[in-house]
Length: 116
Image 1 (cartoon, rainbow, N blue to C red):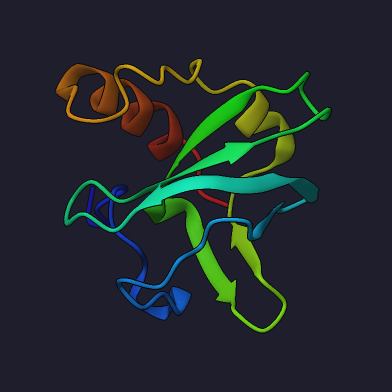
Image 2 (image 1 turned 135 degrees about the vertical axis):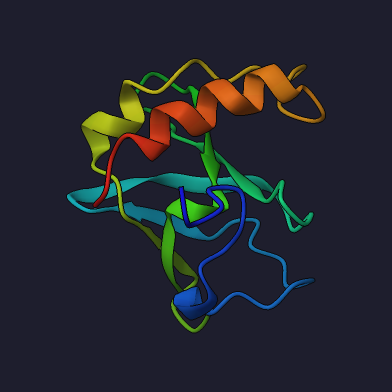
């Protein structure tokens, strides 16, 4: 894999230290929710998205490498995965998403299998 799935694309427009909490998240085929939490850690950047009623109030973990563009003016984040791909992702585990290498490998393996 040439691109680190846990790092923001250079062209995404993210500045480290900028809060993305509350930004709307747009999949390739529509809105999926809002950012509840995010991380800018090197090789471990991610978004935790609250999907609201879309998939019954679940949270999903999106590696930063899925982000294609951030529109700060509109407070929107665009990702290169479909709603179905995100809905079918491994279940978000609030206790494992920080520091659990195996969990990160599982998530990375899932999202790396899709390209746009």
